[in-house]
Amino acid sequence: MGSIELKHEENNNEVIKNYGEKTPEKREKKEFKEKVFVARESLLTTEFRNGNMKIVYNCFTAVFVLFLLRALVDDILVHKMPLHHTWLIWWNFDQFFSTMAVWTGMFATTIGVYYAYQHWSTVPTKDTSLSGNLNFVSAYLTYLVAFFYFPLKFLYESELNCACSFIITCETTRIAMKMHSFIRENWNRAMTRKSGRKIDAWPTLEQFLYYQFCPSFIYRDEYPRTEKRDMRAAGLYFLECLAIIEFVNLSFTQWVFPWLHIQEYHTLSLSTITLSLFTGIIPGIICLISLFYGLLHCWLNCFSEMMQFADRQFYLNWWNSSNMAEYYRNWNLVVHDWLYAYVFRDLVAYNPGRKGQKAAQMAVFFISAVFHEFWFGVAFRCFYPVMFILYFIFGGIFFAVSRLITNRSAWNTALWFNLLIGTGMFIAFYGQEWYARRGHCAPYSNGVVDLLFPRHWKCQEPIQ
Image (cartoon, rainbow, N blue to C red):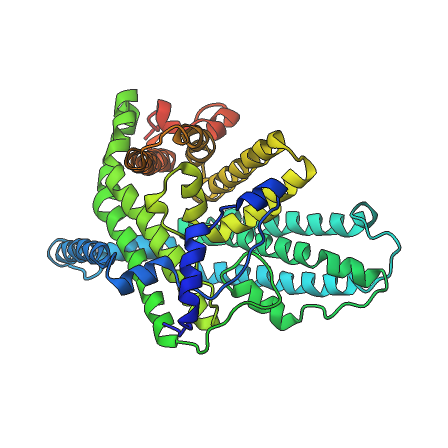
């Protein structure tokens, strides 16, 4: 691990304890907190070092090894082909290189936006209000539409499989969020420059490129940095990411695929569909934990090591949250910071008061639900708003109900019950619809109905 000075440890613990809390003075003034970057380790890194969470890590490692041994025995004795079980990985990344070529083009456009924004900031103007600069705003919104449209067009025309589809949709979202923060955080600087007044300095291309790859959605000219780059640690994090991909692959090839592949879809009843969510709970929770650990811990820490990025508080102890608000905030602090700064705070500033805060809170839930549904709906090529319902409707209800649960143990039990049922629904319902649309069920006669309604609800056996 890259060395981070010990003097930051006390500060780290204090921030973890008070993250998101407001003092009585701040609450009275109704001030919004600003994101402050501080050199600190990820929570799991500290917990592993202290030995508090190592047993959980060892337990998951043992499960992974058992899954792998079972797969290898099946590969050699049944299929007579070593690593046969990796077919799902190769299928998912079948067009990885063409996908990365498109990603390179997507990233190159951001450099064009950087230079366009820099040039526009030098053009003098008397009106520095937002309404007086609608031409730039219109051009930026047009860019965003094109930025989402053309990669999606490539995705559908090339018939990308799930993993490559996720790369395209998640990266368009990530880069768009980065660009929005860069433009917003430098807007006042640009207006000052356009009015003829001097500014200290415009962000350099090096600063812009560093921000594009560092694990933060909030732009700053400078971030706290570690004293040295530890490429060995970065390599180990990357290997863990590969192991996580294999773990998810083993869960699907040994649990999900054999179960869903042999189902008689034209005989599915409501009871069968409902009960299937319980079958999906175990592989679902494995995928959820793997996603959290692989992406929010290993992947982000890998980039932090390579880029000497010192603020590694990407999440907090969401697994021991005291209410739903704390869970949503602690699960992914990187995205939460962006939603708080550019959705919640901006909407409350536009519509202050308690009603404005509730509306802004609902907008955050809605936007998060829409984009989760966008990623999964495009990847699985169906409109089946499981993710939207889980995040916006069930999540919103659970958010309100959680405030009534005062016993921490009862709340934590309810949290895990909600997560287990939700992951079971995701695996079962999306999985059944995936297979229903790939040869098991004929499409509905009406094209609109076929687009909007799941086929496995009322499966019509395809004509042989």
